[in-house]
Length: 238
Image 1 (tube, helix red, strand yellow):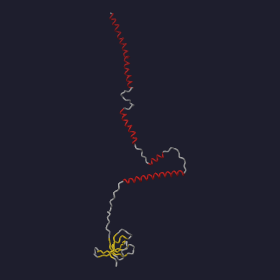
Image 2 (cartoon, helix red, strand yellow):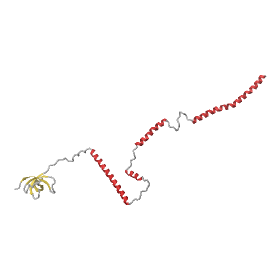
Image 3 (tube, one colour):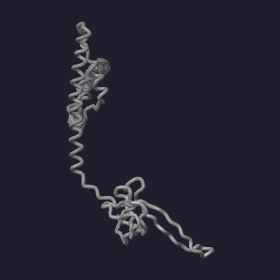
Image 4 (cartoon, one colour):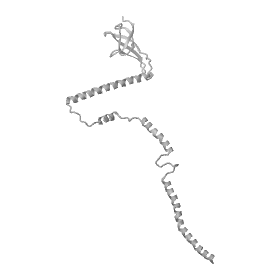
């Protein structure tokens, strides 16, 4: 009986211990559950050592940016200067005004300034023209000699005509009048047709006289009417 009582006394004690331990178990486990959460939040706040920061460029990006940075000054150095026309340069030079008003000048002073500006321009213009002429002379000297052009007409002198006639006048100085007698057969009637013509010939030594038979040759124009020159006297007049 005593053992039964002891068992009865001990039996209900077990539930008390279980009840005492049951509510305490969650309290003991709660800190263990909270510790990983704190570690995860700390891990989220501190970036990993292996991963680069978002703001810092990677090694590949830095290597790619270095050639671009070096090329930028080179391009700026190689870029040609802005080409401006003379009119645009003058306009920009006139636009550089410091804002200060020029002092009042008289008409004589303004005229003197204009004359000085004209003289300056004339000196620069003369120097430029001399420079251009010197360059043109150098270009002509350096250029190869042009080939001679072939003549359009061959330099061959044609046969000059010669006539024989009688001097009918020698009154003019160094000029004789020669009558040329022509006898030809008519083409249809076969009759001998005689005709004559006169011409003026140049006689340098006044060798021919009236009535002489002479021979003349065609020459360049010597006067308004003379196109012939005396060759020789064939027969003297009696």
